[in-house]
Length: 141
Image (tube, rainbow, N blue to C red; front, side):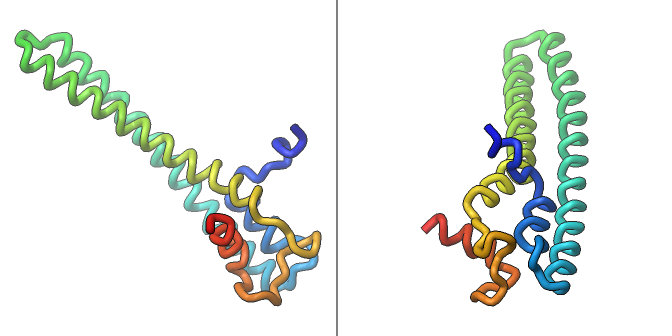
């Protein structure tokens, strides 16, 4: 249970912990800070997109529901029903992808990538700053 409480839940936490932790050079800390800010902006933009897609999708689903209720013939009801199902699937997939990218993938990366010297990733090995990404790729061989 304790490991779930200390799990990495954002890209900026992941970058800070594995690239700019204790024992890292000043250049690595600067790179980690820059990458952390960039991923923070990307994460915020994705959450805003999630909110917009959810709101627009809900309004459109209500509109389709009204069309479904007012339809007089079976063809119009079937058409509105198909559109309503498509909207629900699209909203669900969008929500799932954004949550997976913003929360689940950093947790997976944090679980598979181990610090090599107990404090930070060893920058002298091949890969340098990209070593955590390379370690994730090695884990899926």
